[in-house]
Image (tube, rainbow, N blue to C red; front, side, top):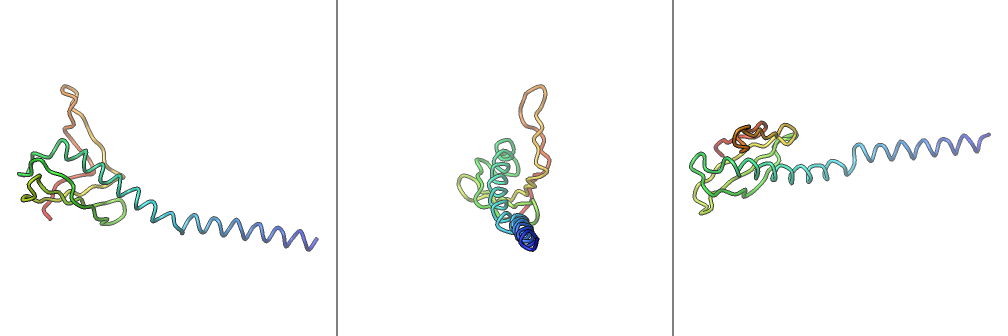
Length: 116
């Protein structure tokens, strides 16, 4: 009887430890890395349609910085490197809306220009 209780306690402790590692452990850093890639991709989609706005022509993402939660800051530079701007990207809210008549992306939620 005592052996079964000890065995049950060990199984419970192992399950609890595994859950704690899964919940609070390495998962957050890998999630941030995945979000960084997704934020860069979302910024690229935004730029593909919006790049000629705000005097930034032929622009590209220069760097990404995590701001808070699911929000990332993309620093953008023109092809010549002289014009600089920033894009705020919320990876959880990012969505592209396409014009029904042209099929071109014309509206975005979760991303927008602002000065750095």
